[in-house]
Amino acid sequence: MRRMIVLLFRRTASFTALLLCMLCIGALFPRTVLAASKEEVDGRIAGIPGDIWPQAPEIASESGILIEPESGTILYAKNATEALYPASTTKLMTALLTLENCSLDEIVTYSSTAVLSLEPGSSHIGLRVGEQLTVRDSLYGLLLPSANEVANGLAELVSGSIEAFAEKMNGRAAELGAVNTHFTNANGLHDDSHYTCAYDLALIMQACIQIPTFVEIDSAPTYVRPADSLLNKEIPMGSTHKMMRENTEYYDPDVICGKTGWTQQAGRCLVTYAERDGLSLICVVMKSEEPHQYQDTKSLLDYGFNNFKKMRASENDPDFEQGKGSSASPLKLPQESISLATLSSDSSLVMPNEISFDQLDKTISEENGQSVITYSLEGYTLGSAALIPSAQTVTNNMFLSHTDESAFSGISVDRLFVINLWIALSILLLVIAFVIGLVIFIQHRREQKENERKKDERPRYRY
Image (cartoon, rainbow, N blue to C red; front, side, top):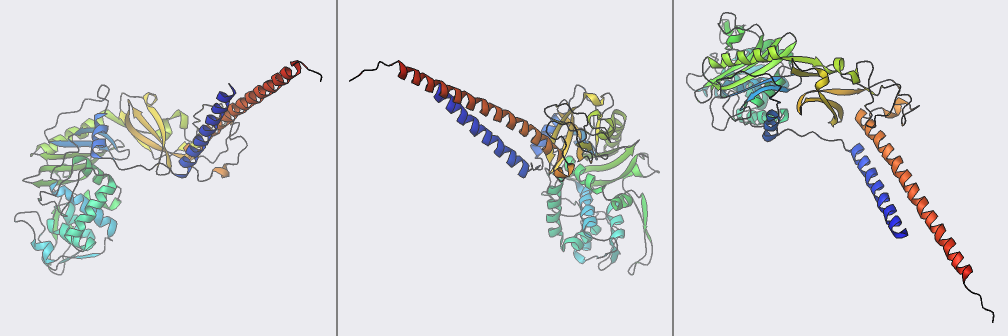
């Protein structure tokens, strides 16, 4: 019996040490969020809860996706990670890298390679070798009339050559989380090794619209290129996206900006950013035929606007009401003042109109050192909100009572929760260890007394 108790005590001590090691590791090395793979994105899309999700329209395009850009929630997808030729929607990445690496007043000098390497009949704005334009004017030429020589000139300005720029494009796509993309040029003219997918194009557009200058330029239905030293006259340019132009049958006032694409191999491709009643959407369709790219885009945008709503978690989560906060104690301990954290006011989620906030599930995690609450519906993520440490002091907390909040400066909120849990477990284990030690002591004393009693009962002989 004693041997069993000693063994149990040793195992308990080892377990306590293991728990402490896990606590230290968790505190010192936050979980790193890795980019999703194609299989993970496909799995996420397959997780859309079809039984309670609004019925989506059928589209003729081979591939398509509809996302809400702020939360990244996918509302609709069809073959969204299938590798397809993007044609001139490639120029979204060209514009993104140009805006990230150049000033608008920089001068682009168009080389013979940029101007003369185009396929016959491909889109251009008639630039000549040696002609110079500002980056701003070049971007209008890139995004509105989809000029291929402009894409080449911007690539050379950013990276020195089109080949080096393509490498930069692929690196940036990976940073954005692209799962099936490989670029070989800056304009999207056909190359068997130049491909992407609807999901990746949505991510690229999501990054583009974070730049106000991109939206300003790409949302212009027309632009007049001023005269320059080689061409002494103004050149008007117009967007090829018919949903942005009032004089077309496909005009949609909800559409803010976008990019068209076409080659014989790619078919019709269309990327569109739109907004209605405070809800923003990005729609991508690929490998379509005229006029289905516009019809499918219109159907998907209406589907999104009519069936989904955007909500601020900070305004709707009763556990994290703005200004109140919550400690979200995993042990559900009673507290009179709950104010370890609040939710960031700019975090949002998107859900079907018929779903209420209290139907959502919540999980807490750490992403790149930031504590995050994720909201889901039947396992499908609808958005998340960052936890912001509160400036107030927690009172009447079993483990944090009378604690100066400055002691926790710089520590993520969910880590504080984890520490609370570990403290509770440590106390519990110490109590168990104390009880076991007490049992061993009592057993030892009993054995000593028994040995003394037996010794006293032995017969004594005199010699």
